[in-house]
Image 1 (cartoon, rainbow, N blue to C red):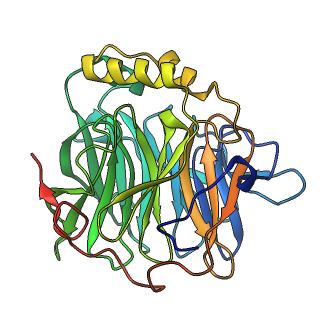
Image 2 (cartoon, one colour):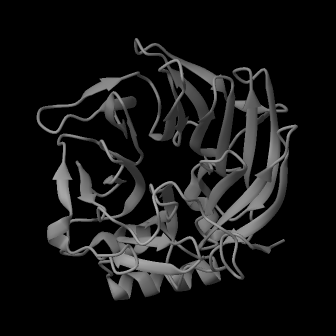
Image 3 (cartoon, rainbow, N blue to C red):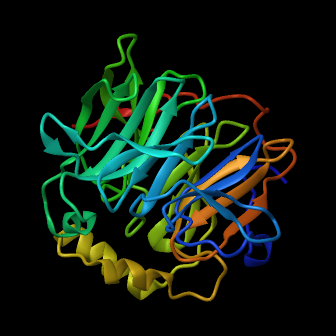
Length: 337
């Protein structure tokens, strides 16, 4: 089966791990599968047995990644701070304010080498749900160098900034605008500044399709978790969007779609989207691992475990190729204000 024909059924989505608390973000490396955990840090998730939390004191650990020295950089969704968890579990704050002002609701920390971190901020306010009732797009991205000794805003005016990740070739920073229903990217300039914002794939992923996290698969396709539709979308190398899996509560999705348009939404409207029968509920993150990179792990805020599935062994695109630019697609993105 080619990647263009690839679909997932409920039976293909297998639970992985157990006893997790709010496993919003997932990370896979040679040491195993890791997830954020509401008990204050991150944990390595065994296929069997109870996970052990590493780190402490972070309010609502959210998006995180790992540095080359084995430490983790973690966004505290509930406390508005960027934290670092050392390999021995020692936890410290790397950044809690900028130019004398609180950061707001930090969402995802992307480690870029040993010293640089890209930090997404959903909104300048805590808690983030206030953005559902505001027409002000005040999400932004910070670049930190040397453990926060230098920190500056490099992109602003984003519509609820969610996951941010550097492309596999290191040339672009990709970012989710959740309330904008889109994935965007910025060229990374030699001095660390960012170029103009470009839309990746379509300017809108669909009515009521609120993206949360994303990852590049081994063939260069981009998998996006759609939290509101309990769905996985794929933006392929030609910029086309496919939906291998969705489990939509139609009434709830229409309700949140209208609320986003009118900017009068509530958290309860989003939570209602998880009222479905299938195994995937409010998916927020995806990562690929395994010996061939074809095993996917999905994190969520609606489950106490991860969900895993396998990609097809032979995709329509040769392994290692990266997204190319096409009209309206990834390689020739449209500039957006």
